[in-house]
Image: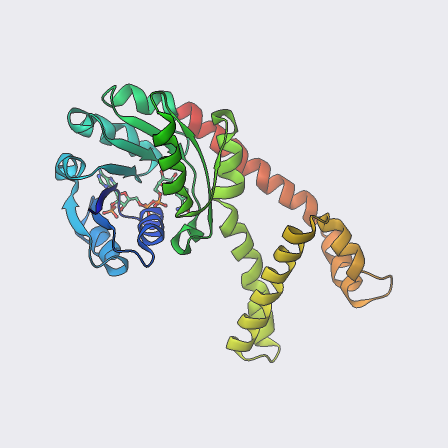
Length: 270
Ligand SMILES: NC(=O)c1ccc[n+]([C@@H]2O[C@H](COP(=O)([O-])OP(=O)(O)OC[C@H]3O[C@@H](n4cnc5c(N)ncnc54)[C@H](OP(=O)(O)O)[C@@H]3O)[C@@H](O)[C@H]2O)c1
């Protein structure tokens, strides 16, 4: 029998999660709701098998589903939960809304619903995301295991204390954007300087995944890798010296602090 999974919100993270869930398996039946028709169609472009609902029919979507992913903007999350409350008995509710606490979610749904708060990132689409999560009360051991197995469909699923969620949001939820923002100028430079686009992309991406694999396999400190390739008067040194003159480490630190502060503020606003 297929597991019925509903997505309240059909945007960027909903598409990534739904795509990651079904990867090569026919055991999932998908539903998604959106505010506009275009939002639903964008979801169906990636998941043509999904059945779409308008926001007015969020309750019908929940009735149909065994597991519901709450994928609307943080400001909309509690309103949507209030709307679906009468049909949440016995459902699994997985909220990925930044800043919306377990307590707030639990207070808006039926007491028999089992609630997960999670903070996934976009590579969940290909099963290579990271998804820290925490569970509300009422989870039996067998269900906890099932929840872990479900979340592993998206990649690296790790149970994390809820107080660390703002930090996880700043590092994990936003993380792919930081790395891609760094990669975009590398790729542009490569193409402008004479490499063909496909060659540039292939070599630069292999360099990044090679560096990550090296750190993963050897547990070596990243700064040691820097020192290994940096010799005084050398080429790596020429590039890193410019970055250091420009204070890039301080800039990155300020960027991370800004993300963390925003995530903490959302927690208070919700
Ligand atoms: N994007 C990420 O990388 C990421 C990572 C981790 C967590 N999150 C969390 O995921 C949530 C969604 O983020 P997103 O980036 O996916 O935003 P998004 O692309 O703007 O998607 C939001 C979706 O919610 C729909 N929606 C709005 N009101 C609704 C309602 N009342 N009922 C049903 N659907 C409704 C929107 O429909 P329309 O398209 O028709 O407007 C849209 O499909 C946020 O809470 C965010 O904190 C995002």
